[in-house]
Length: 112
Length: 112
Image (tube, chains in turn brown, yellow):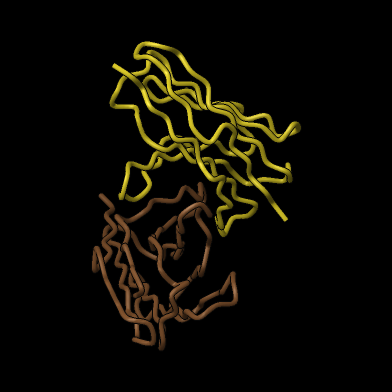
């Protein structure tokens, strides 16, 4: 069966520090991968999606970047965090043809 | 631009009641629609997926319907239980790349 992992589960970082969040998927090949952010009162927002290795699309201009160095690994990064980067970050995957999305457990990021 | 609306934002019902959660979307050209459940501090759990060619899907006490022409979906929960207390999110995809647009969710509380 397929599983999706995210780490760390929680993170507290000062403003201006770098960020690296990792997501890996097991039990499937060539999945579409997604990064979402859930901020209080704002709902879930798609940040990046990827249809293959090194194929990344950004949905919202921001302080973050994403990379996909391997088929089932998706990384969210920042060089310098802002207070507004705080939120709950969720990774998800989907496969054709249904397009049903499955989510990981999330990372709670607090920027202080 | 696709927009998804879920009203009301919160709902409290006594145990045993049958209830309907509503979701509306502005662009009827959807690929699929998913209902998710989110417990506090956790990731999203997929409940039901309805493809654009389908009218409804059922899983246990849950039934989701889709009316594309009117831009509406409903999630019916039969014989509600305290364990059903959670936030329920509706999301639509407008293409095979499965990018989802989410509503803000309905927070359901089922009172014993």
